[in-house]
Length: 110
Image: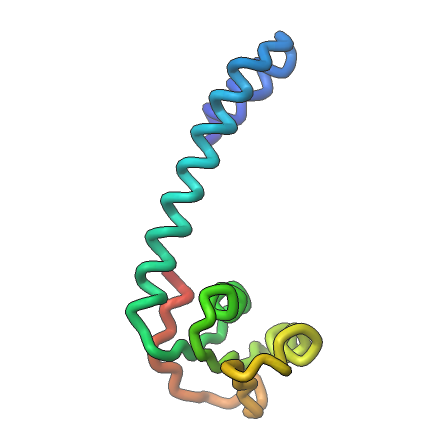
């Protein structure tokens, strides 16, 4: 990744738009591949319980029923209460972030 960043920076300095476009195409294809791979893993589950905000957001985008558990400083519940609490398939865990809870299918850490 450091090499591609250097080459992209060099292409910028040299005003080589074609090389920058090539790198943009490469990164777009690479990230698209990652998203498809992770989506396939998520879609294998009927429900996701996660402590990871990205896991909750991705589950919502894929319309997978999900339970979002809070972290110690309330980021997950804050996000869920603001943006996703009215979605029928979202459940916000009411446990205090300092309590231990069993998280099944915590696949968001992939």
